[in-house]
Length: 389
Image (cartoon, rainbow, N blue to C red):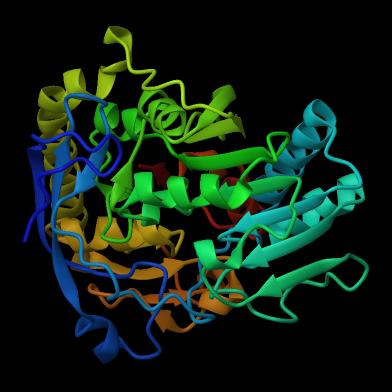
């Protein structure tokens, strides 16, 4: 059954605008065999927008079908570009908000890179909740961090945390108003608690027609205004909200307030509603462009590979006609090697494959890594054409 009520502001009247049928339900859970990848469970996406607050949700999302566990490989921690940025972000938060000698609780802490960085840089202690955590993967022996291999729920409370972080987790939660309500109730009268949230920016996806940034795990989509509106409605005051990581991510810092201030939605904050029609055209144009390119590569008998074996790659490969021409997916994360992309079945390999096989074209799934990947290719004498989506 599809939703009719907005999970963010609880208003009725969601308007569907985008459909994608039979996509794999997981994009970071890589498969040990190609056959398992090809047979992985699929579901439908139907994105709908709330005209009151601008929030977007997958109306057909089914809770409870995902396998969040240590076999998920969501980490970007093997990239120097990413880790330099992440440490810079942690430094900014520590300096700007005096996060030193505090307790930091992270909901959705992944493999622990951010929590480790903010604890190291600020002399903080940490608590991390994530069923995808892998003990021993990251050396945190010199830090005071308690990783708990489970999802955070209201019953866990916040353990007197001074700071609560939640990065790239809220977009996986369908009932976002309920979740933030649970968090606000857990904080109680600790009004000096600081919150830091990070989610993808949906405005960029709509403007660019970036179909490779829409996948089943992401059931909730925000721009800055809809995110701020949600926090205000749930009993928080937004202190700061900005775009970062090449304007791909929204960053939000907030504190709880004694009384909710109500929605912050305003006429200028409904950009997502205005972009729906242009997204349809941009999406169709982007699909046509990449379908045409792949057909030309096939006609010219070019060897094509993808760089970046994460969610973007899975969405790109599963939603694009002619993607079977892409033989391999290259990724620098060794924990992904010799696994297979769910749905499409391409094998993920390390960059050393290029010492054995030649690629004419490499499609890079995130342009922010272009300089890093180009350096890697040049260092090893590979002259493949490098294209960023």
